[in-house]
Image (cartoon, rainbow, N blue to C red):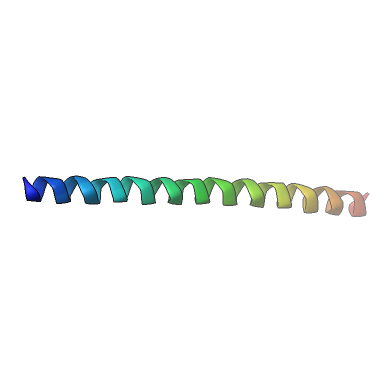
Length: 48
């Protein structure tokens, strides 16, 4: 029973850390897209 308990414990930690990593990736991508959209529109105005 002890082995199973430790296995579940590490599995829960893994799931939590993987969730945090996914949130960080999606948040970073969204912020980068927003930044690129702002700088892209400024560059487009300069070209016109």
